Amino acid sequence: MGEYSEDNRGDMPLVPKSKVDPKKVESDRLQAFLLEMLKEEDNKYCADCEAKQPRWASWNLGLFLCIRCAGLHRNLGVHISKVGWGGAVGGGGI
Ligand SMILES: [Zn+2]
Image 1: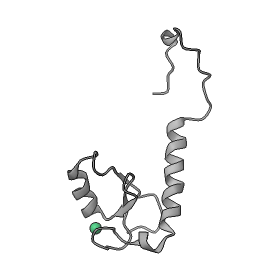
Image 2: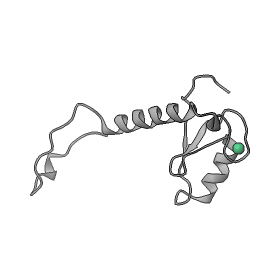
Image 3: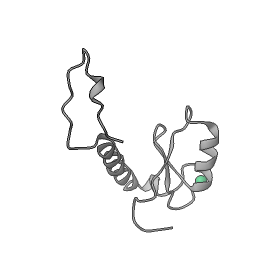
């Protein structure tokens, strides 16, 4: 992971290797986004069943979900709901 192949040089200009891992940046951004979202009163409960402290999020729908409803959303397929783990958020534990 993260290894840049020199063989890729063609008509594309060589992209300077960034010190920052774009995937890390993306996950940091999502983490910050989640923290912001969790400050909203509405997001302290599962969007589907109103269970407290939802730990899963549907990125594309902008919802927070409990683990049970996250499983249901996953079964719908990622084309409908992109569910991701937000477990590190909040730090309160379940
Ligand atoms: Zn739920």
